[in-house]
Image (cartoon, rainbow, N blue to C red; front, side, top):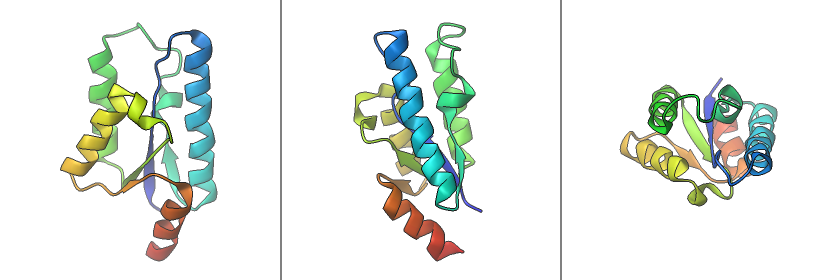
Length: 113
């Protein structure tokens, strides 16, 4: 089974905005599972941890997790996030397959089965 990292914005101007970003990533993670992959959703891993450590701690940890994944899928608003942009560059630099929609990812997963 392929392990797929879900990338997208986490931070926001309010608790509501952060919760919406988490829910958006969570919905995409569910689609990954339903497509035959195993989703790693860092939004759920560190939900409510904001301000508990410096921001670079979260990004460094997320990049370490991403490095161990088979691919990454980005939420449709990923370009709004400094962290997701860094994750995108990390994936490109390390030849980790990148996906921007669930249908393309699902096809890739099925082709590898």
